[in-house]
Length: 359
Image (cartoon, rainbow, N blue to C red; front, side, top):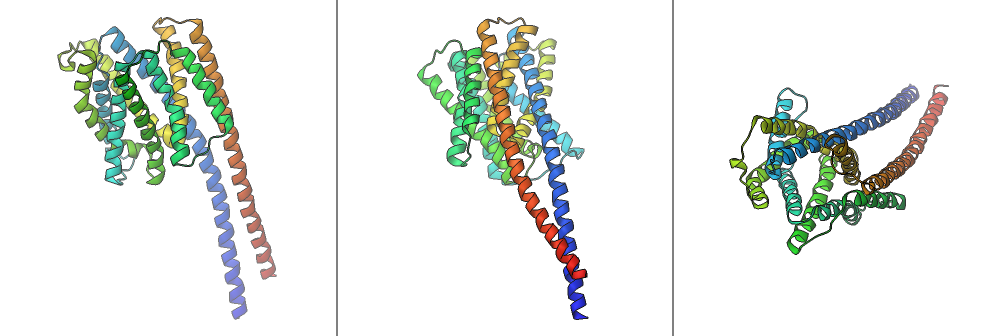
């Protein structure tokens, strides 16, 4: 009798273990499919919304003379926070509080990085500002390698070099610089890299979604820029944002810019959370190339063969980066599949033991 109970106990344990292994397999397959679709959706949303807001802001600043970029960004963040608060109120996502010091520090750092990028543009030529943006990728790679022990293959490094070369050819013209502008550029690159790396690491460390992180950090970003924005804008443009003549057309474009910014801010956190800071920067340079093309088509901006050659080289770099990332992802998936097959082998062994016990 005791032997029968023991046999049935072992048989029941084996059955439960077999079911759990099958559940793990099905769960991993479904999660991989959801991740792939989610990543593609995030990348597409980021590209469409970013290109749209650049075109909208370009019309607002170039055609209508509204030059207060930092203040406008603070309004973007305020509208984003209000939109997320409404989404929370109707229960579209769940509020998940975590370490307050991390949230405050992260929010303020993001606000400072935006302000420093605007100062870099104000104190340097457009060409040097573009070089500053190009420097974000190698700086991010260096920081992740040194402090997060992340490894980038030679193929990935080569594709990034091709990408940066192409964007440099397409966008960098004059390289006038000065000491103060160089300091602002260096600080802008460092703070932007750290903020984007933190966007990825915080989501993984505290297991929060991009929406939850954006909702909690948005007020601190907005507050930082809302307080400093009017002073920075007046310092850079010699104009007062509060004395500007807000015509109905200006208000319409500001409203459109703020609404599009909700999608931009959300997709930024979403892309970095699902991929990596480097992939987000690669995507950013794709947006730059698209903005150049759309600017030529829609706004009749000047365009020459140098822009065309640069965009072509940059696209080659992006294709290579996508190819090598996909290949490395498939390699990791194959390794995971081998591990899963090992688990299935254990399951088959357990089934054999169960059969012998029953017999």
